[in-house]
Image (cartoon, rainbow, N blue to C red):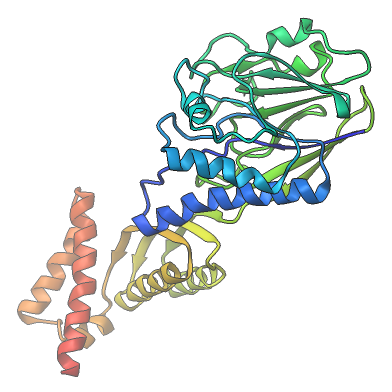
Length: 375
């Protein structure tokens, strides 16, 4: 029997430019934390090896400190690590991997596969057929040589590659690197560990994507896992257990607001979030002034609870009711004309920017009026 831990697409060094600097720093740090969690799981489960199927680093220009920290994060598991270059960290003549070699920071139990071929793990009677990417984009199947690759008799045959299984994963793939969906059968593989697709995905009984270890996109494609793979004997169908390792959960919500109960629904949803959540929220619709203010307050409160929150409220129109106008003292006179003009901009302006500014101005006017009355 052999037991492996399959992971991929760590993207160490990701910048997270869409977030505030403090948010981005926490998200980047989580990627190291989750690598350490994977190492601890590998040690506690007593696996024979950890396979990282490409894109260990997000870019070739990762700093020396990031490189050293990554290899330091592997210390929790003293068994074999097999790291495969992917399209983000391809094994170029000069790459993040050659820099790591010069830094002399790659531990003895870590094997970085820079050339295609076989790595034999004799104590587990397993041969790893490895297809590292040596350039960012290829148009030929880098796993095709697996079919004719000999391995010792009686050894498990486990493939390791990074790319897109043809005809199955086309939308949103990082690169065009094609992989034949029948590769496990044609190459007599017991298991084919893949990377590139950032969510957990089963191609067939023997071909799996583990997905990224720590979610990095607002896409519900089952990220945040490593795969615990057990194969009883050569030729047996693998038993694959999904192991959740990710720290943060990313959500993308779209909320329409048309009646007060919609505001209550949104508030209730936001109250379910905590410091392990990252949210992208789009709110649209038409709300009375009090309801629009309640939405903004609920979003601000949620922002303080979550790890990161990106909210777009520009499509939420603010339409004061007669009661709102009375509370503002804006039923007539100059103030009434200002409110009427702002309402008109939201309804009739073709400029989305002006529409959003008009809604923001109405909320600001309400706050100023309340503060003035209190004073």
